[in-house]
Image 1 (cartoon, rainbow, N blue to C red):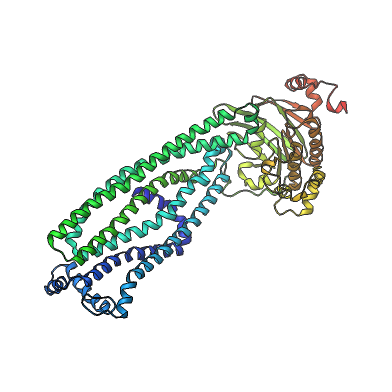
Image 2: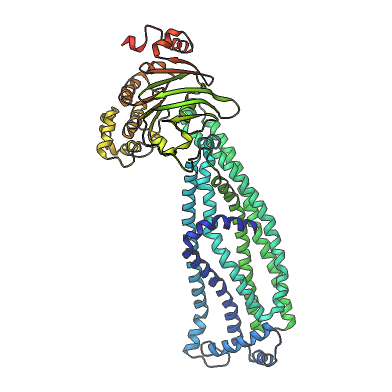
Length: 624
């Protein structure tokens, strides 16, 4: 029961949004359940009217006695009222049959089934409609939550885990709301309605029949726990398998180049076998519930038949009572299946609760200060940062005035990309502060800050959208003229125009249909259309060949005009045009100066340049 309440409490805020359909589904489900009791009455009444006259005469004699118990009095009153209403419409043994009795005898059960089926259909429809809307809202909320989290979460989480949150966990809840919630209303009401009808027929016999009910319930809880354990382990293995699948497909070139197909398929197969084993465990536990309930109920059914025969109950009462028992234990089986569904759903709900309760480590201030434009400069003051135990940046003091072109150099792991991450406020510094125009970045809204900056990085990101849509991501709502102007500025218009549908050509997932230089120039066009005053280049040409690099560098030079530029580069020749270059080593600023000054100084920068074949006198500027 706790697991059912946990799932319902989780879904309640979403269910409230669709309370009209939900209320309709609940009401119709209750009517559906109560309508099942009518079959007990119909069976008992019709069989009673067909019974031998000797048996029918026994009933009035019993009714002449003044019953003293509630259910006995209720039964007498119901029999009198029902007799008056149905006498003209149902056939009676020994009486001539007219058209009304033929019609009544023919349609009584079809009519009851039609009413019951109609209410069941609309109840299930309303609950399923509500469930679909709830799960759709939940998927969107999970994606919104993921987008709101800081980069440190994505450094910890796996791709398989995040995908499972959006699709797998919500899919289990969807099935629960579509099937489980409908039955959670219909089946208990069926059991209650039928139980009330059985008490009216014979309350003592009903109490005797309920002795077997606890025997059916115990295995439901025991096996339900096994199903939950299997679902939890299966989910964990499924997440690992999804992450592996993403790795294989995203790194397919490496897989093929090193002949890793057999190895990777073997790893995938092992996870698949583990998932199969857990699913089979769940199926075994789930499917064992029905045979147990059916066996116990049939034993009880046989004992009741013997007892009824021993007590010489009227045939009509016996048939009606046994019909009621069948209708009673059917919802018991369905409720057992519901319990299993909720046990499985609890695993997904727990994971969804965990992700929805996550809080970003980088938050907007409650009352952000306005930052409309960039006027003076950016200042790093005693900035320190660590992803874990080891610091990545230490006591960094740096000032970048408006209009300055700053180059950032250093060995791998020296903190270059971390500096960019802090500037965009993907992370907050663990020590010191970063100020823009005198405002601490933690005092302004992230949206205002990032609106002033454009990023072009080594990791080219294009989406499976048209070329025009990819460029326009830099400025939502951009016109076609603005898009084409940005493409021309990035030297991308010519190759775009040569594509099959021009600007309406789809770039393909991750831009796989384009060359590296073309993809990078589209990213530059995105930066052009953003027209931000601060341009950040993070190894923008590192993965390009010399020809593509020259093309992209020409576009970068045009983009950098009249802007404040922070360029991170491992290839030092790309920093020759910078006004100033800083050199980082183990998170510290160890050198600062112009390109030529640093070469002549013979320090860390000169050592890196020498390894790349750059010496004083053969700099890119001198060679030009």
